[in-house]
View 1 (cartoon, rainbow, N blue to C red):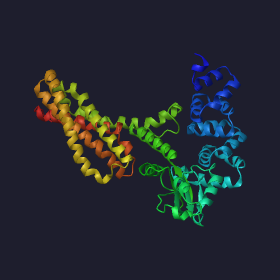
View 2: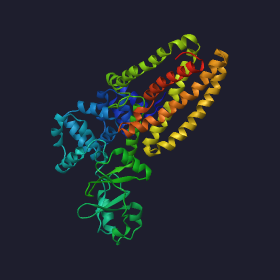
View 3: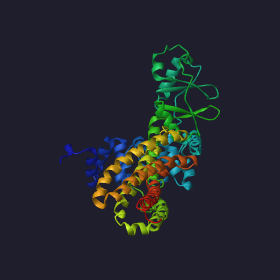
View 4: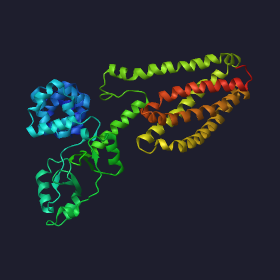
Length: 451
């Protein structure tokens, strides 16, 4: 393969293998920060630091921002105080605050001296906001203007400060106490008369969030109202920053990943799956698995209780895995739909009665369809009498599993617990226990065996 046929990433890899500094420098300067960050993720921490050293301060900061949190933490541990201080100085305020929180506590005071006094105060304020809130997520780099300015004066402010602003598509007008008065879109500003007061063009009804608003609520608002950014205010109305749509996308991805992990009874990982330490993966997974082992003891107890039924009709055992799996699968489906609906705001606790009625109708239809399929197999395998027991059991276990899967997330939410915990393993284990008891109890009754 010639150099012309290779992608920039392949060219970089070849240059690194050849230890060709000039070729490496040429490659990294042409790569987008996101692509270079991906290359850094695939290298050892020392090799990643070497790649970053070829970049300008601005490019290094842009690339570092694209790295996962765990890789940022590891690289910061290997940097000298001077290297880390220079990096902090080049980062945007919100990214700077994120990195500062990941740095070891003993190094923080020494790093502050690399920042001007006003930026030190800004950093201290940003890191003081609790993690997972709008204050911790926001960027303080906004274009704010006094509400009594003219359009021409606002344009002058925009020219001076646009390079440092997170976005210039919305300009925020404030009063003497920095309280938000209204917003002005860039489109309106460009079309307005230069001599007109900016107050004539302001949108006064502005959606805002407070610094303590949970970040998932902020992301939901941005998605619901199609906002490019949402202002963040203190309780007294002072504007302190904005959360942009790209920050909201990161939050949505983070929350979705966390929900998926919880649905499989996995604790929250500090970093990415690809870089997580084996012990961390073990620690996050072992708790629920051990708990579910003890929960499944009840399944065994149910089977033991109906030992006489099984001895009389050994063919019943043939259909047991099929029924138990069907119940668990139906429950997991229902739970997944509910958890996702609750996460997006489509489902609320007050809807439980309506949703229960609908789920019963759907589950009964599913159970009847599956029963019809299994009845024919059961008749050929064990006779019509047992096939009838299996078919009726199929309807019941699918119905019960689906109802459990639908109600359990709502119940956990009512108790103040995470509804995502209800999915997959937990619902499946509960459905297994109920399915076994229902199946053998029905078989005992229909086949005329002693209970």
